[in-house]
Image (cartoon, rainbow, N blue to C red; front, side):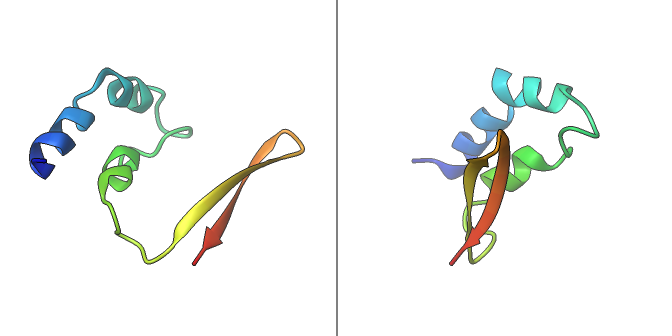
Length: 60
């Protein structure tokens, strides 16, 4: 798999464009770049729904 081509395809995807179009205050401009930076951090985040809200918990 060509990592650069895959990254470019995701960055230019309609979903990435729609996500970023939501705008500041809701989506950070670097969210897509952070999501594509595999193994950037030495931990993962678990997402749980608690009382109708999302809770992030560091794992590892």
